[in-house]
Image 1 (cartoon, helix red, strand yellow):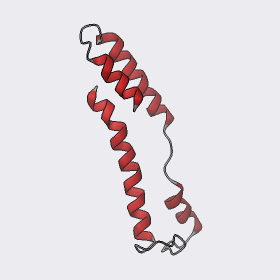
Image 2 (image 1 turned 135 degrees about the vertical axis):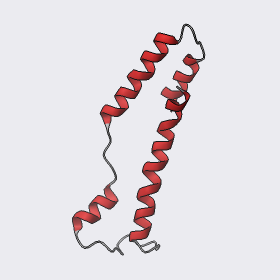
Image 3 (image 1 turned 30 degrees about the vertical axis):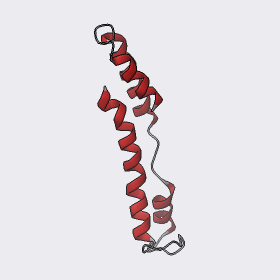
Image 4 (image 1 turned 120 degrees about the vertical axis):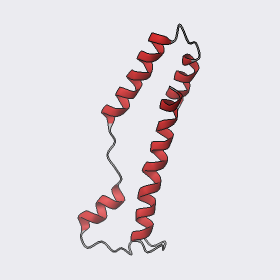
Length: 89
């Protein structure tokens, strides 16, 4: 459960860092975002628009945390603060 609480932060950093590095490489490490090595507009849009937001994965993670906390929280009360941390993140 603690790992599940930290994974959204890791996914956020990964989803931000990898496209940022790709954009910097495409801009030849400059600051002008109109200087590009892309040959077509589709490739340019794909690089700068970001990834898809996968709602089905996010909702299944919330249901998993709720189920595990309700099922085992009576025996391990530490799960309630961990679940609150997960929902807060």
